[in-house]
Length: 94
Image (tube, rainbow, N blue to C red; front, top):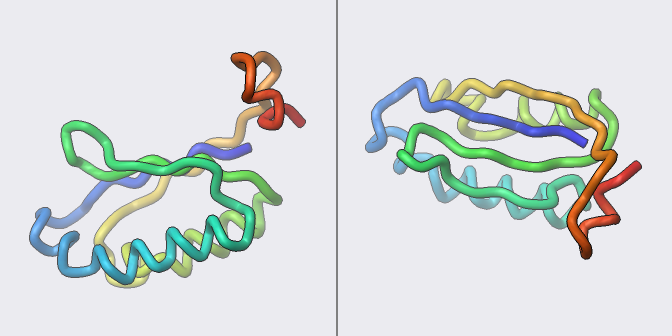
């Protein structure tokens, strides 16, 4: 499993300009089964995505994000192994 932490490099008006294509990209991540959860950071400095799959696939999808392509945000990709979960989240374990 991966935590994708994105941090804006531009002001929010520039991020908002690319939000629609970014959200289409997010939807594609859910459609292809890679994304499990996503949302904005609070305060709004970027976002977080929980993803699963192979690291090479995750890196490739991050590279295809309009926020990456247009220099809106940087991504930090952190891999972790869920060993303990709350009831109902057992599917997050390897």
